[in-house]
Length: 72
Image 1 (cartoon, one colour):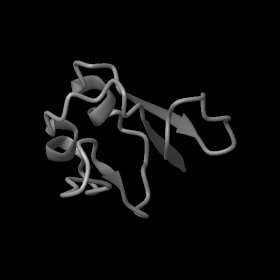
Image 2 (tube, one colour):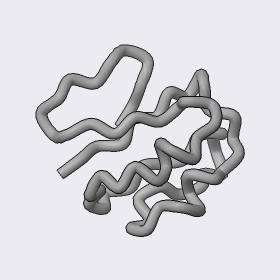
Image 3 (cartoon, one colour):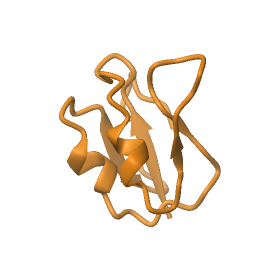
């Protein structure tokens, strides 16, 4: 299992990550710029990370420590 980390300071609100997530784990929010990470199971395809031109997304394996400034 994997976790999606989003650096809200880097996110440019393009929404491309939402469009390429095959499990619909990332969804647009009405109250914030960056996407919301749902409770779905991320299988680590890295589509969102690859398409993010801002470098705002990281995929980590469960058990890895999240770096400061990011949220799951």
